[in-house]
Amino acid sequence: MTIKFSSKEIHFLKTDSDDFTITPPETYLSDLLLEKTTPITVVETKLAQAKKTGKKFLCAVLEMTSTTSDAVLEKGADVFEATFNAFWDPQKGLWEPLSQTSFVLVFWDQGNGKKASHRLVSFKEKLSVALKTTVLMGAAIFPHHDFSEPQTIANAVKAFDHAAFFGPDTLIYFDATSLNISADRLYQQGQYDRAIAEYKKGLDLAPTDINLINSLGVCFGVMDNLDQAKLEFKRALAITPNEVLVVYNMGLLYQINGEMNKAIQQLRNAHDIDDAIFEVELLLGHLLFKNGQPDPAMPHLETASRINPKSGSAFRMKGEIYLAKNLPEKAGHEFNTAIKLNPGDAISLSGYAVAMAHQDKNLGIAVSFAKNSIALQPDNHLFKERLKAILEKIEGHTPLPEETIKSA
Image (tube, rainbow, N blue to C red; front, side, top):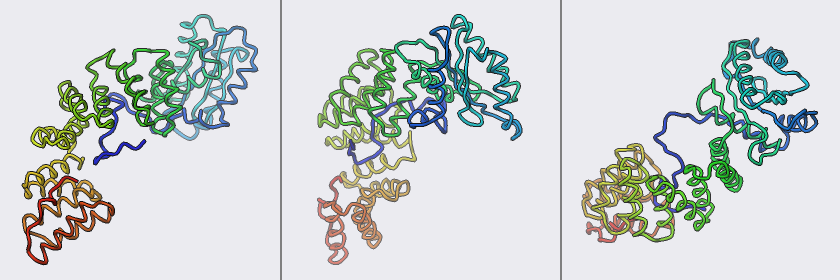
């Protein structure tokens, strides 16, 4: 679904954008799971054919994240194999390279889970010393929940991507957050059905996880399943009533459904929880203005422009308000800022043209801006009326009609 607003920056919120403690990886190893033929399938086959002495095993995916030379890279597989054999009986484990610097390994019959985990940490440290490199690792244990053996390998891959958020020398075991990250990746790729399945798996492990519930609601929202999205947001709010991202998303749902007063109230609730979130202030200002309340809208738009001065949306909306209040000089200043930030902003181009014309200055430039706005939105009737009025003003020095200051 395309959610249509005058600003593309008004959208569902999924994560706390102010959290700078983690950094997403540049690439995701879990993308391999979407391919039909990968080294992962080789490991799955080997594991299925292995004569395991018990039902338990531990799978790990690792990458040498910093290497000193090409020579180290060239001997990486040999050193990995030697280190693997020093820790595990080859009859009780297996491994497979994923690339020159990354590997997947599986071992079983190592006693309880705590003992196996300690051995995995020791292996990681030994490999790091032998290759003079840091080792990033994700791991998963079988059995766990209702995941199959092949799914356990995939879980280790997802845990690896989870670990990558925290730096090159991290080891993380698969959990609900790993599934949240995996689902978010699928969401980013537009694979919403797969993302929903991942979010639901995560909720099987952590039924009250607000991030998972909110993300599931967002996914339903972008798929235009608004009723299901609302159910998820309500479920999240029942657990944590003051979760600002969910409160905001609920307000956005009301706006999409045309329930303006409910949307404004929800956004005011979000503002009361946290008055320093750009999206909340922008959308609340937007809705108040469109609901015929320009004066209450302005403080929220001022706040939005301070929080994110690189966004043209708040400046454009302020320009529209000043234009509607017949303050063309102030409107022109706001529109000019918006255009500098986004030269393709058709609404600001048209509004700036009207603001200049109402001040009887730079009429030639005003015509040019008005024409540019129409080139960007050729079916916009208001833009055409504005251009016509400016041309008539130039030809006959007639005042612009009130209609030209209407909101776009």
